[in-house]
Amino acid sequence: MAKKIKKKKNETYFISDEVKEALEESIPVVALESTIISHGMPFPQNVEVALEVEDIIRREGAIPATIAILSGVPCIGLSKDEINTLGKKGQDVVKVSRRDMGVVIARKLDGATTVSSTMICAAMAGIDVFVTGGIGGVHTDVHLSHDISADLREFSRTPVLAVSAGIKSILDIARSAEYLETEGICVLGYGTDEFPAFYTRESGVNIHERVDSVEEIAEIFKAQKIIFPDQGMIVTNPIPIKDQIPQDEINDNIKHALYDCQENGINGKAVTPFLLKRMVELSEGKSLIANIALVKNNALLGAQIAAALLDS
Ligand code: PSU
Ligand code: MN
Image (tube, rainbow, N blue to C red; front, side, top):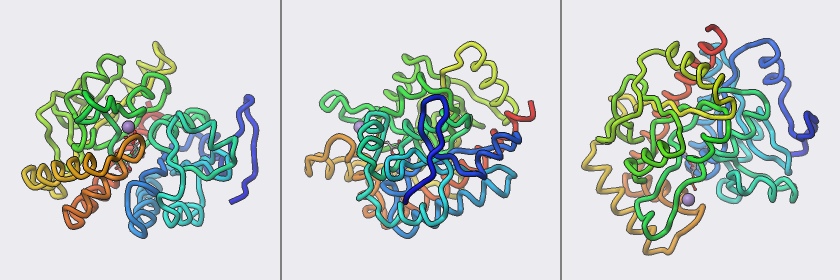
């Protein structure tokens, strides 16, 4: 996976010609993460979904920029082969959040970027909009583990707007919402008054602010950028009604997965991939189908927001 290296402002990264041209010509660009490929879904569905998500973005007239670290080089815009390799290697690739970036770059390793590191790379390249499935959050056993995803703090440090289906319901959504409020992070609900719960549309937790159009989202992000040029924003987009998993069913699976996680002594960055994998097993594939549907739904909205940001 050797890559051309380009230098800009003392930072070393690679940006594909297609993404570079789109940015220069004011064509909307949407950043995509790679941990969801390597650690979030099984092969080969992970690769199929990653490529389909890119297609959805293209059909909306935007350019996708899937991000990963390859041989120690942050890469913005991957080829199909590179996406395929990341998907095949799966959990053998390093899961890279903000904390891990220096190590993986210095050691010239391959790394899949999480929400935090993808946002850092997107901002470095000048990409405003990023699409993922669900962002990390405060874990349910936070009182014991102090496990709070680095994703949350990233939004108070990095000026990227992320589209997600909310905070994964394997997490503590109410506490995650409180944490985001403390960090001063704007969380918008697209067509909803509630924090979406990833596999389901409702969580019972109030969203910070409801919006009903992409134009509103673009205006709010622009207004915020003027006062806080370094701050990100979260747009939550509920899973489509037809793709939801019934609440009781998914809650049983979540309880079971959390129990297994504790029993197996899983901690640190292994927790989220373990829970997602266990959820697929316990739900007999239903959680994966829902996860795929919501990511595609987010890709559509992300491409529309990227266009609205350029129009307004
Ligand atoms: N959303 C998904 N699947 C995933 C993730 C998010 O639908 O695999 C990944 C993202 O990369 C996110 C990470 O940043 O999980 C959170 O990991 P942690 O809880 O260790 O911070
Ligand atoms: Mn964690």
